Length: 355
Image (cartoon, rainbow, N blue to C red; front, side, top):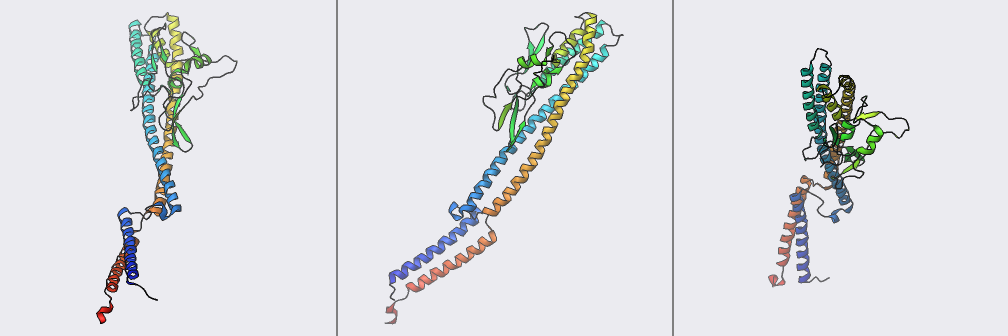
C-alpha cells in the first residue's frame, strides 16, 4: 500500500491538533474547577446540576423570607411587650384609684396619667417595621391603623386597618403569618362594661373589616388571609367587645370627675376586668409570635441542611478532581510533544538522503 507524502503530513497535523484539544480541555477544567463545561459533556449529569442549582436558589429565597419574617416578628414581640407594660401600669393606677382615701385631686392625677398611657399605647399600636410598614394594620400596611375619631362623642379610637394577616412563604408548602392585625389584638376584647362604645362580636365583625381583598402588590412569596376572629353566626346573644383604647379612655373619664360617682365606680370596676382581658389578648398574641419564631428557626435549619446536602451532590456532579486533571494534563502534554517530534521526524524522510 502506497502512502503519499500529503497523507502523512495530514495525519501528523490531525494527531497534533487532537492532542492540543485534549490538553486545552484539561487546562479549562483546571482553570474553572469544573468537569462539566457544557451540556454535551454529560447531558444527564448536567440536567441534575441544573435541578440542584434551582433548588438551592429557591431555598435561598425561602431563607431570605425567613430572615425578613424573623425581624418583623421580633419587632412585633417588642411592641406587644411594650403594650403589656402600658396596660400593667394602667391596671396598677386603676387599683390605686379605688383607694377611698384618695381625694378628687389625686384621682384627677391618675386620670391624666391614664391619658398619657393611652397615648403611649396608641404609639405602640402604630409601630412601623424597618420598611416603614405598620405592624398592626393587617394587609393595609401603609395605613395608620389607630387614631382618634374626631366625630365620636365621647371621644373614641377607631381602627382603620383590616382583619387580614400577611403571610410569607418560607417553604414549598409553608405559609407563615407575618403579623397580627390590630383588630384581633386591640379591638376584639371581651368586655363586661356595657356602656357607650361597647359593641358585640357580630356587629364588630360587620364594621371592623375595611378590606375584602388581598394587598394589590404583595411582596414576593407573600399572601394575605383573613383568619377567624372569634365571631359567631349563632342566634344567641354574642358577648360584648370593646377596644382596649376605649376602655382606657373611659377609665380616664371616670377618674377625672367628668362622670357621676356611681357611674365612675362601675366603669372602674368593669375596667379592671377589661384590662385583664386586654392583657390576655396581648399574652395570647405573644405566645403565637413565639411559636412562629420557633417554627422559623426549625425551618431555617431544615433548609440549611438541605442546601448543604445539595451543594455536596452538586460538587460531586460538576467539580473537577484536581489531582486527576493535572495527571491527565501532563499525559496529554507528553503525548503532544511526542506527536510533534514524530511529525518532524517523518517530514524529514526523503529518498534523496540515500542517493
